[in-house]
Length: 259
Image 1 (cartoon, helix red, strand yellow):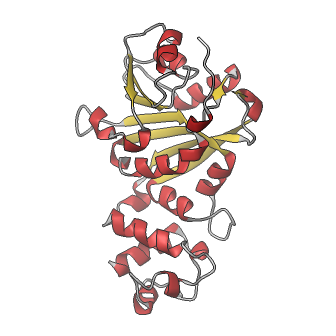
Image 2: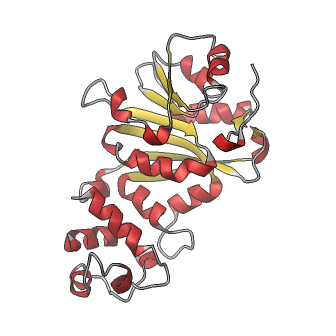
Image 3: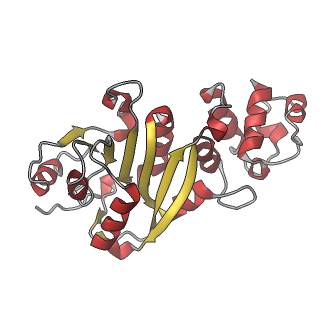
């Protein structure tokens, strides 16, 4: 069953079988994996995943696409559809036990990709891995390093909790309708390298947000509401530096000294 893509949902349906196969290979699903697909659309990834899994949860907001998804997946009873806005979805509701780990995948609408990633940070302790199709520009920002023009709040926040691995680029002609930009596949795997040092996630998030709120201003100005000059120096950082010059480790030192 076909479906007319809706601009308000940022729908661009993946149609290239080679890319679909590459994504499934990257995810490497096994029967017992608890996989959650965000925005399954017409089922380009859903169908091959169902062939490998005992159960698949999908989150889809567009109520008009759901009957077509079910039809395209042969009404497979392993498919569990949650008609929900992913930005409001409680991923904890999918956990069978405290030890449950989720593999999350999706072709994220460009207009909400960053908010979705920030939403998922709240569930990092129960995530095994994430594979997302994103606008290449967003992937570049996530993977950026200090001093790079793409480096910013998104880079620091994602790298604080996840190991970042851009996998491959996806041309616009692999979609229908074709977007005006290139996409890329990004793999994220939780890491304790930094996350174990974040004592107060809300404070850390605020610190990073304020630091990048006015990129041309120095830390002593952007952080003045939560961190004084002496505390910045105590972290071993020059108060005259700008946020874009700091590593993730630097932000964690600031976090420890400014709590």
